[in-house]
Length: 377
Ligand SMILES: *Cc1c(COP(=O)(O)O)cnc(C)c1O
Image (cartoon, rainbow, N blue to C red; front, top):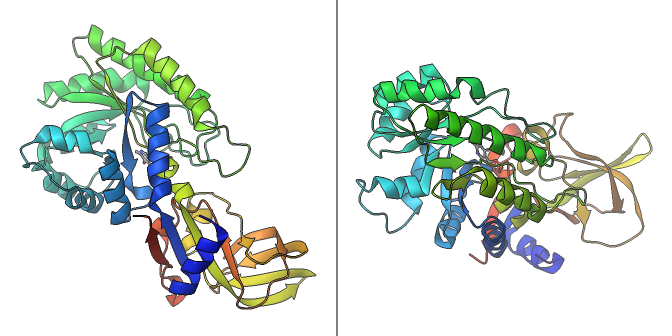
């Protein structure tokens, strides 16, 4: 979106405001599919759970990765022309429940949909057998996540050496393991993680086959990096590696899916805020804006993501600090940013803030989350 378009939204809706451009979402989805043509994209809803985004991506052809029962229902209710519930293949084609750990109440509620759900340990398997016996299973593997912005392998995934036993144990109890999954860590810029993970998955599949069980689905997870800065190599480079490994390691019949979250939505949103105060502290100009790290900028804390704050006004720039509106000392949006001299009432903005931002905003200090405005829906 251009600066002029952003300004128009802020004038019309006030601040703080987040603008989500659905044309950008459709472009990101199309670029993902073009570069990874064998891979069906299951959008990881937790990155940004706006129902408008679910509907746009569904219309574009996407499927969905959910991680809680409310997310499952959010998708279920927003995908139109849903065939009858018995059409289990439709549910599997459109939704994977990818959180490996689930409370029993969630399993009970999910069972009627005969969902495709992920597990990674024996206790979870017993729970699924008891509370969601109609589910199809996907086993999550632990894979290297060196250098990813958000690491996940200490929390989820079975050791590759335990995988085949967990598959055979599921079969013994009457459940079927349809697929394998992994997640190389979010914002993965070390593409070797994907290469290693694909090789680990292929080895598990071979061993399962040699012990009599064919795996049909491979879920290569999320982690597809967003170009937050110029050091991030483009998706095209990663896709070339993934396509080569998939072609080399897996039979053509294996259905491949991925769970991109941030890649589809991060670049589709910008946040606009207003300068509500200024001060000079230790010789540095400090601005206070009407958003915070407890709100749209929560990705700074939870996602380890640093956003740039930019001004609409031009002028000679100086190193400045931008603080959020709350009374917490850690509510600093950026310590050192080149900004022109700003006045109270001026607007500032941050781009590429569509993932893990509004999604984790709170009401801390009594400030409501920023208004969300959808354009080009
Ligand atoms: C968060 C998550 C994703 C999305 O990850 P991105 O790095 O945003 O692409 C995908 N799969 C699972 C299981 C997740 O937990």
